Length: 622
Image: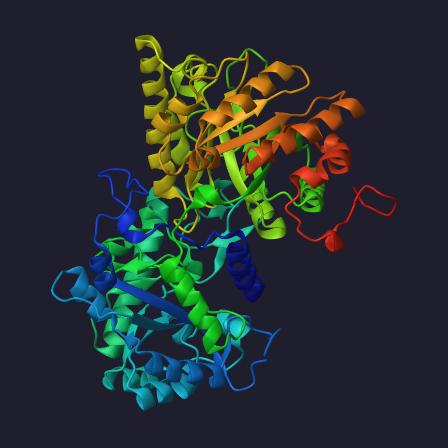
């Protein structure tokens, strides 16, 4: 079970692109919320080269690893690793130590060009029997991340991952340490596992999850969570330092799961250096988490080199990613029994998986009596009653079962009309849902004046500023508690009316930062002139500005075949206008067959017709 969790979480994260965190120097810690800003680097290209290093993460090394389809997707063959070490020497790459990074971070030295850090996770016996001889043969340094409880007898997890008798012992590690070629860091004491994350019994990464306590029918509070994490990291550091006679400096987070919150807890525990997973270039003078490339599927030296090239040359630009959205109200999953909820959730996931859209937007609030005020939420929080605890399981299942990114939608009216601090509420949201990709904030009609006119009145300008301030405060809270391996994107949602959109360009350029989007909701059947006017307004935008738009069309209960044909044309028009993020609003389970039949070609991310499956034909389950 533990091995399945390990492989499921990491592999699904990579499929999603979730292990692609922000460039460390592009991150700027705010005093209270550790806000991340995707600002361009101010360093010159020469300075960037001097501070840049590539970190590779390996796991087990075996002689018998299959060329493809091995039982352990993280294993590499001894032959391929040896050939890669030879390639490093031939191509002039310079393996560096963790201490080199620390000295560069303190601005006491510069890293060499083509700096590379070799790291090996989990303390597998092959690190001593296979890797260490290669390090001695080439005089290469490497870093080994050790889950100390595994070495000290909590070996069940390790046995499930690698097999019995598969770990190094402290004596072998002391020999490696004394050679001067091996550095050892924390991989936590006992956080390399999943823990109970919700009443529905999902297991999620221990380091970033508020544990659900079934006996008490509640979640860990902040004090309990912080104590658990700090105690674990302190125990790990103390054991490493005692056994190996070192002053360990770094935590390599299990599964790459880390939030700004626990970055701070690691520093409290005496571990100032933090490493996650991803393929974003690292600069040694960062004070935030560094990124590592995860080596999978027994790659050849040429394949590893390609990963390194991508790591160095590919700029992070999440706004360029193509997305296909389904907006779904969690209220439809409300159930009288856990079994009924699972049946409904399974139906939703099957439908989304068949459609091959890649992004779910979940409406996380409910207006019970239709008076325009939010009465309850679908996640635990300190502001409003919890209708049902549905969000966490839905997010996790959508992510791990069907590889969908998930956003949560909250109305800005919670603050503007009900006086609830949205940043505080967002903190509650993310504490229990760190796997969310981001937020969709609906300001209602507060931005109508801004999109309808190019020149804003003073009153309109103040409204825009108020909404932007709420967005930035909420985004800061979200980022502080969310997995930095996610893109952490925020969108403002507008439901368009009328046919005057001269303010579209000013709104995109003035209201959005580099990690923001504008989510446009339209109903072409009821308001065809609005759609035409909007498409015309798109001509005023540049290519990058268009990439910051998400355009979703409302699904109506009684759409005719003519209406569906119009929607197909509408999506084609949006594509022709270079809109790469499209979707549908008001998706209901009962709409699945109609959407599949009429909009599959427009919404599906499936590039191969050979893998198409229609779940609604005879023999389909839903």
